[in-house]
Image (cartoon, rainbow over all chains, first blue to last red; front, side, top):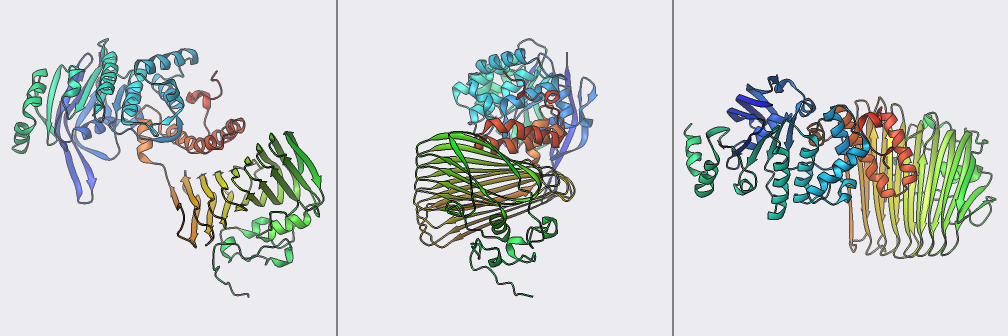
Amino acid sequence: MSTLEIHNLHASVETDGGEREILRGVDLTVSSGQTHAVMGPNGSGKSTLAYVIAGHPKYKVTDGTITLDGANVLEMSVDERARAGLFLAMQYPVEIPGVSVSNFLRTSATAVRGEAPKLRLWIKEVKESMAALSMDPSFADRSVNEGFSGGEKKRHEILQLELLKPKIAVLDETDSGLDVDALRIVSEGVNRFQADGTTGTLLITHYTRILRYIHPDFVHVFVDGRIVESGGPELATQLEEHGYERFARAGSGA
Amino acid sequence: MPATVPAVDLAPRVFSRDVADHLVPTGREEEWRFTPLKRLRGLTDGSAVLESTPAIDVVAEGFTVDTVAMDDPRVGASLTPSDIIAARAMSVAPAATVLALAAEGSGRADVTIDGRGAGASHLIIEFGPFSAGTVVVRHRGHATLAQAVEIRVADSASGTVVFWQDWDRDTVHAATHHAQLGRDARLMMGHITLGGDLVRILPQVSYTATGGDAELLGLTFADAGQHLESRVFVDHDTPQCRSSVLYKSALQGDEAHTVWVGDVLVRAEATGIDTYEVNRNLILTDGARADSVPNLELETGEIVGAGHASATGRFDDEQLFYLQARGIPADLARVLVVRGFFTDVLGRLGVPEIADEVMSTVDSRLGIDRVAAGLLEEEAE
């Protein structure tokens, strides 16, 4: 049983015009067995929340706390967070020329698991996970994210999710840029990851269509750097029908 | 003091096999301004006593191997030295080694040039018409070497020549590696430079007929105190030819210095050509310096394409973030990025037999333990 607790989180980014606050007091708790969807309009800061959890150096946390099973996440380096059990599936995965997917995955798994996985078992594990995501085996020889289509990048993110088995996964707009087939394949991967109830997922999205495949237990509406309303799946249905307008007013009135 | 006259174009100003025709450089000349002349051990001013010819070992399949006198017509048939060191190499070398691949033949040759002190060497590599072959020239040992290499790729031949500078740390190596391409000939010329104290190589390309296609690839890793210099010169004087230049270097440690100069001259008659050159330098620590000078001179606009790009910098923060976000510690993430930077070039070169050994050297320089890091290459089945 794991719990990610975010309390009164404030974070800002350095801009040409000085420091700009993007997160303005986020409170959120994600536990194993739960899927949370954070939904919000563009520019609301929901992706920033994902990056702050992962520890991107661009953002400065000015107030509040993040803990994972009681441990202070904000004191950890980016790689320590990952090894502690946090995972961020990125919206725009970075190209790393010359680093093969197979080397990358194994180095990453070695770091997260604390020892190099046995080669024979590892090869089988990767092969099966790739097959489940309809990824061609030749994929393993390509450079990380280099020349990948949008769908390939997202599948590669979910492949890592399945292999690294984090305690809590944050998925940042994993649905963006995917056609229906890819969206289904990627969603199935997330559902497999979430299936045994030992892991938690925080799904960040602008659109509701991914929620046809991944069913959240909790839905949070994110506007202007904080959660303005939380509820069950019915909240997503409301958003689908009426959009963010009502909440945008709530955000600006806050 | 002689006045320095600015070059009117990018072409070297003097071409001659006669040492006396070349001025002894002072360091103020454009083509010598980055080179620490004092560390050349007399190769420029002639005070070097070049009497220890390096040992040459050739393991060849398909290629014939000959040793010929320096007055043989094949010597200097395509290379006329553009600097005093190449001229000196050709005047001092006691003989030339000739590797030749017959017309329509195919073959592979592994040449080891083993330094034994101060000396000169002349090497000729010929790919006959419609032939296809690969030559790997590995330089090792300790030496003060003046060297001239001429490569001739005949009509419709396809050749790969890789020069691997695997020298001992104290070696000085100054060379001109000139390639001449015939009609529809293809050449991939690679330079992997890891060793030596001072290595200064002038890879040069010229064309004798249309359709020539040259790809030049370089991989350089300079450690503390090393000066590793590459001065590319592609002379587009023939229509409808192509050149592509990609040089990458990584630097670490105090006074590590790389120099890349990419001179591409597109003469008025070279219509319909396509050229692109790229230099990327990755500076791993403070105290290292990479000089990068792309020079593209166009005397005609009737071409398919011409361009260059150069970038020198530190690590890409987003790449490091991505790797770290997957649990990989920062130090190892940097190592992966550097390895990737190089395997990219090695992959293009397509000589897997040496790629792994080159990467071992790179890994040991970077202080990486492959097995502990979970890297696959060695144990993969």
